[in-house]
Amino acid sequence: MTKETIENLMDKIISLSKRRGFIFLSSEIYGGFSSCYDFGPLGVELKKNIKEIWWDEMTKAHDNIVGLDAAILMSPKVWQASGHLTAGFADELVECKKCHHRFRKDFLEKDKCPDCSGDLTEPKKFNLMLKTKVGPVEDEAATTYLRAETCQGIYVNFKNVLQSMRLKPPFGIAQIGKAFRNEINPKDFIYRTREFEQMEMQWFCEPKSADKFFDYWLEERMNWYLKLGVKKENLRSREIKKDELAHYARRAVDIEYKFPFGWKEIEGVHNRGDWDLSNHSKNSGEDLQYFDEESGQRYFPYIIETSVGADRSLFAFLCAAFEEVKGGRTTTTESAKEIETMLRFDKKLAPVKVAVLPLVKNKPAVTEKAEEVYNLLKNDFVCQYDETGSIGRRYRRQDEIGTVFCLTIDFDSLEKNDVTVRDRDTMKQERIEINRLVSFLEEKIKT
Ligand code: GAP
Image (cartoon, rainbow, N blue to C red; front, side):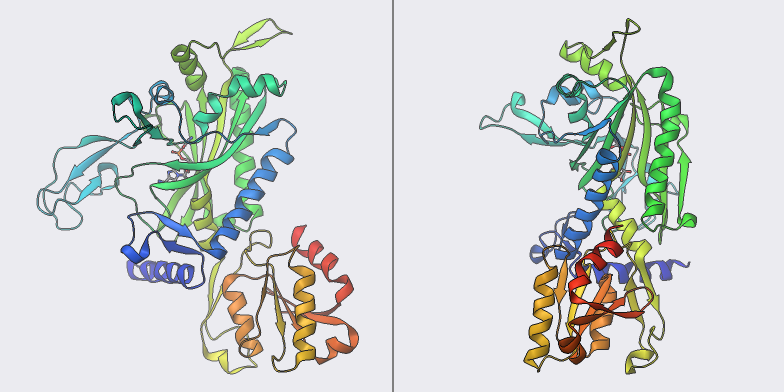
């Protein structure tokens, strides 16, 4: 793709996201707030679905993974011990001497400013932790940080969870929550933001089994995307070179998605060894080793981590679902000459499952029947009711947001007590009796 085509495609995805209520720029009426975004009515449903599917996959499909919801604010000692304030959690920042724009050095292809070709300063280390003050006294003791990764809340609760749930390795702790990083170059819409949500699972295992579990979790996580509709040719894994590893990692593989602007990381699978538990032990004075009564062994479990951004994976799912059909899919209406936009979300991901459409809006018997159908479904499925415009236009409005099924209520529905169900992808229509509708939709959408 040329640079122009890429920009054009990105503009279309960003514009659809705003126009149809998926994603808005934060504080937009004040001109926006750099690299922060709000999720609109459809975005919040989509993100909720992603999080729910991930949560169910991690905690319900595995007997030995439990959940946690730790506080965002933690003792600053946690970040000292984890290495985020000292070792590696800093990017190299360079500034253009002419236009004073700032860049992450590792993102630059040349040693010149990409905006004005000016000379750049020597790189300076820039820590990504976002500082905040806790309590009314503004002294150093009151300084802490917004968490930069959710997993530290898991490590400091390792013993609490182990004991309260009577677990033994191997076992996992899963968590979904907000994380914050003072990124130097936030860019590409919601790809790199300063506030984002992570879905992380930390797998605690006996050190010798860590390599085996690493391979297992990498495969599981790759399959998760494929099951949710990402095409095989747009997904790959990339081994991170030794000299590029994060300060805590012994091994790391990035799962990458082919965005319109190139292959980019959407998830990391890491072998963190005993970095976290041994450092928290040393710094807190609490022994976080596991004692195996059977073998008499005492050891720090190794941690295999799977870490994905809820927002970043949402962006990948959005790009994967986006499709334009030149000339439209229907040949029977005047819209045939238009470009039709569709979001072909996986059924489980789609923010709206069902649209209820009375064929006409000026016949009370038809609209009352449609309202009856809407009321029947709205507690089980996210539904929209739409009676404005031609039926063709309404179908296209729903296709544009990825609604899985459109139900039409016509004059026959009054006599036969049924509806026409139109499938988004095949556009096939079939008549289904209203008293069978809930089980029909449940089977199609939830399985
Ligand atoms: N606990 C390990 C960890 O945080 P990471 O590779 O720094 O590892 C994991 O981040 C995932 O979190 C990334 O693959 C991405 O999906 C998401 N993520 C990280 N930084 C982000 C940012 N600035 N904006 C959006 N998502 C981000």
